[in-house]
Length: 280
Image 1: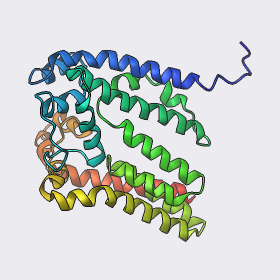
Image 2: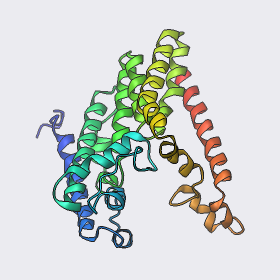
Image 3: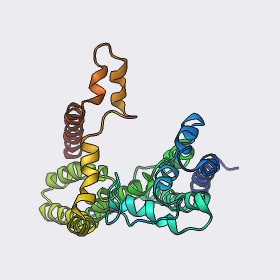
């Protein structure tokens, strides 16, 4: 093989697909333990997936409640939709998981394609990453990651309005894609490009409200559950679990207000740092 020749364009997709397939084979075993027994089995076997856990809570008994209108969900609306749609797939729990996994696999391959088009980025950082096998179907994060990368690519190509729309859709799937806003605003403001800033902000707010506002008006209590649930959430499988191992600080893992304040402070610091880097 000629070492100077670039690898085939399809190779990153094949690598990502291989890891994703390995993840499917590892996690789909949990379909045989759907229901109350699933979570203990999954944690014992390092094979947990929100797809089977939350799907089993709702759909495996034959029901199909509409997200937010008939069912409260701890995720934003687009992830609620991704949770609900596979309930139409045949094949019981295994069919449900496979349908959800196929959606996530498409998002993963879309991430590879978007990274390949971003100047200075390498799709191999994702495509060759074994974490795809273990975390690719842990939950639905590959969907907002794909939307975030679409926003980044649109911004790179000077389409601030489209970037805002993609970021707004990403935030309607999981809030963190709004992290694109501070560095993007700083970079555009440095060039005194105020019109793109306005277009991006309008796109972001417009897309986010287009998804959320109808549900907030139709079912305000169920729509607000995402915000209430996460505002009151303790450390639970997060970085803050480290407090449990600090003498005298174990109680802090249950103090939701303190954890939220610390997280907000870190988030604002990271946003300011990202904006400063983009400005420079």
